[in-house]
Amino acid sequence: MTPQTPSAEPAATSAGSAAAESRGGVNDLIVVVGATGTGKSELSLDLAEALRQQGRTAEIINADAMQLYRGMDIGTAKLPVEERRGIPHHLLDVLEPTDDASVAQYQTDARSIIRKVQSAGHVPILVGGSGLYVSSVIHDFQFPARDADVRARLEGELETLGIGNLFQRLREVDADAAKSIGSSNGRRIVRALEVIEITGKPFGAGLPEEQKLWTPAHILGITAPREQLVARLDKRVHTMWQSGLLDEVRELRPHGLGVTAARAIGYAQAIQQLDGELSETEAIEQTAALTRRYARRQVGWFKRYSECTWLSYDDPDRVRIALSLAMGENGAHGDA
Image 1 (cartoon, one colour):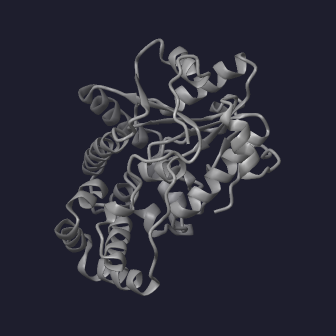
Image 2 (cartoon, rainbow, N blue to C red):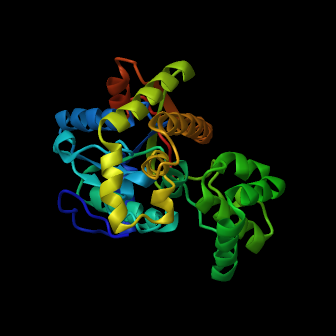
């Protein structure tokens, strides 16, 4: 994964010197998390502008796995360049849809960018709802080992036996991992079974739980009442179709879609609609149901962040509160 950003990246520095600069709190990492549809992008932009008014420059690092893909814009709610308010964004459009995203590679790339941003005296803001991607960056942990032969065999079984068979197998050996991953993410189900077979331990044992932070950080979470969130998510899904998701998928398909991209929520259903397997109503309803389920898992994941300060999505003071936390005015802070 080669990071590409709208603006040139600041000059690199050593991790040690960047950490030393960050420890003073001047440009600590800010993390904005929450379920899809809660307004993370808007808060990050508002916070970056508020910091600019304080004489501090912020840069945003994407932590949404599907927004890594070039050309997958409508279905991922990716902010167009003209709506980014002149604020540098990183790790958007860095993969082709034929590529498979790697959390381990993302961890390396995101951490490198964070240190470069800090070395320039700027404030890095990590924003996204992909729990494992966020945790891989902010928590100090190592990824479990890999075995190409085991993985190839499991991927073959995924194709021949189906995702339902492998998901049931995962439920039998690690119910917690199955609940966290869900029944529709074949790639992560395969990865979980691979780790379990290699290590003989539950997949959860290799996932980042509440532990030491990789670097000092201010973690902000956005929350919304379930019934209000569901309404926002359903509206978002309908807007995706109205905004041309089918045309976007038509344009992507001749160039190929990898396993990850083709199974993304919304894109998989759009493909089925174009192939005549689903009506538009069925595709929208299925996408909405999967989005609601995904949001529920996101809420569960981020609740484990004990040092997270939660803000209501519609609190008129949320930017002021976030700025106060980012400036360290109330002492709320996670130390590495």
